[in-house]
Structures are given as structure tokens and as C-alpha cells.
Image (tube, rainbow, N blue to C red):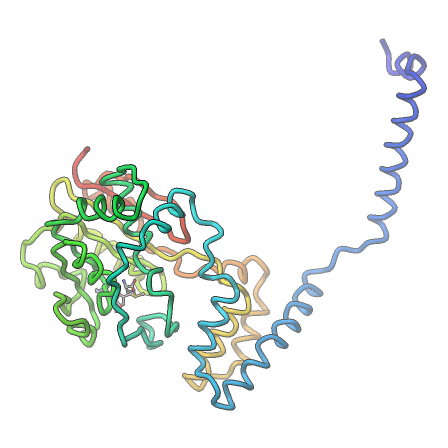
Length: 344
Ligand SMILES: C[S@@+](CC[C@H](N)C(=O)[O-])C[C@H]1O[C@@H](n2cnc3c(N)ncnc32)[C@H](O)[C@@H]1O
């Protein structure tokens, strides 16, 4: 049957439907002709204007001395959903909801990372947000035991940790180490900033370079080696990462595990620009210059800047050293790299 035959043999209902579709298409084309998509230039101008209004007011409050810049930044970040749990995996949500007992003895430390190029600028964070994803990964890879109560979850996590020799590289003052120690692990940390060692009493945090572990721990090996936000571009370049990866593998026990996590959340534009303003203010730099630099970038580059802490650790470096990769995925706001030393 030809198209012509089809036209002449179609029913009145079919002809009416095709006429309606034809009219709709025509209307859509007319509409498209009239509606101009906003240009990149226009989008940028509107966005810039909105952000100026939002951030400008805060800057006045800070200049008046009512709030510190870092506290204001923490509030903006929280408000912009940077610590939001929306995108968390179901299993993680269940783990987190049941983790209350694990954090029951949580200590609030009067110490924080300062913005001096080696830490982040937030003065406060929800205390329990640190470490939950790490514990979740440990449980997932080493236990996987079902749990239906906080008691059972705590017991499962303790079972994984009790008596294990654990090393955190780039541990800061050791907030996570304190938690792992309380859960029964035998913990140590290495941190390049000497002033962090001894900040938390009773913790074995040693001043040293992760690339020179032999000098710090001799030939000792560990069941679990982990890092959180050490292997990020902001902290380590690729070359240092490779150097450190080699050392970490040498100091991992046969059958041991390495977990490396790098925060990988997308920041709101207001958080990024406000944090730039805070840094510039502290360093006495000109904000206008930074803003020009930022807004003159193409859209995709500005977008890329919104991702914090791009990872500098190439998982190939772990594979080359004889580890087996168990996980390499972005989940729960972090890039998780999990590798084990022996086939299991
Ligand atoms: C972004 S902070 C993360 C701290 C901690 N892991 C946390 O999650 O809260 C990175 C830490 O790594 C430390 N660091 C950087 N390079 C290091 C190296 N080569 N050896 C040991 N520590 C290092 C920094 O001083 C800083 O305290």
C-alpha cells in the first residue's frame, strides 16, 4: 500500500488526529520563532546580579562585626544544601539512621581547620557527618552483616574494627581516629602539620609525611589504611599522590584494605563566590579581579569549578602496586576508592 492509498483509506477520526498533530507542530514552530533562548551572556548577567544581591547583604553584616566570615560561610553552605542528604544511597541512609549508638560518646573538640591552605574554611560542621560514610564502606566491604537496630549495627562495626591496626594518612587533629579508637581499633595517624599532633589527648597522631612512612612507622604494616580528603587536587598534586600510593601499599598487610575518600559534592554558586570573597578578604586580595576571572570563563569551566576536591589519586597506582580494586565510585557525596591487598 502506498502513502497515497493510506491517506485515502484512513478513517475520519485518523484524519482529524493527524490534522491536530500537524497544527500543534505548526504552533510549536511559530512559538520557537518568537521565543529567543537566553544567550550565555544574558544568563551570566542575571546570575551575577542575583548573586551580588544575595552575597552583598552578608558582606555588610560581616563588615559590621556581627558574625565572622567563616561562620557566615558555614551557614550559607548549609543553607545551599551542601550538607544535604537527598542524594544518599538507600543502604547508607539506613546505616546513618542506625548509627546513633556509634556516635553516642562523640566528643566535641574545640579545634578546627583554619583556612591556611591546608584545611577547609568551615568552622563548624555537623559533628556526626564526619566518618559515617567511611564506617559504611568498611561495613559494606568487610562485614555486610544485616542489622535491624542500632545495637546490632554497632556490634557489627566493632567486630570489623576491634584489634585492627588502623592508619589514617593526612589525619588532621584525628577526629575520625578518635571515633575508631573508641570503637576498639588500634589507631595511628600521620599528619604533615606538626601542630595537629597532640591536639586530641591520648591519640597516636605523628607528625610526618605520608610519602615517607618508613621514617615514621619503620616497617610496620596496617590492616586498614584510609584517607579522607587527602587525595584531593587542592591538597596533593598527581605526582605526590603517586609517590604516597606506593608507600601506602608497602605498609598495607596482606589481606588488608585501603579506603580513600574525597569529597565530591557540587557547591552552589553562592557558596563558591562567597568563599572566594572570604579568602580574598583574609589575604587582602582584590575581589573584583577574582570575579572578573571567574565570570570570563566559559560556562563549562565555571561549572567544573563548582566541584570541590577533584581526586588526584589514580587507582591505577594502587593496581600497579598489587592491590585489587573493589570500588571506584561517587556515592554519598564522596568519591570512594576501595582496594584490598590480596585476592579475596
Ligand atoms: C583536607 S585535610 C583532611 C583532614 C582529615 N582527614 C579530615 O577528613 O578531616 C588534609 C590533611 O592532609 C594533610 N597533609 C597534606 N599533605 C600531607 C602529607 N604529604 N602527609 C601527611 N599529611 C598531609 C594536611 O595537612 C591536612 O591536615
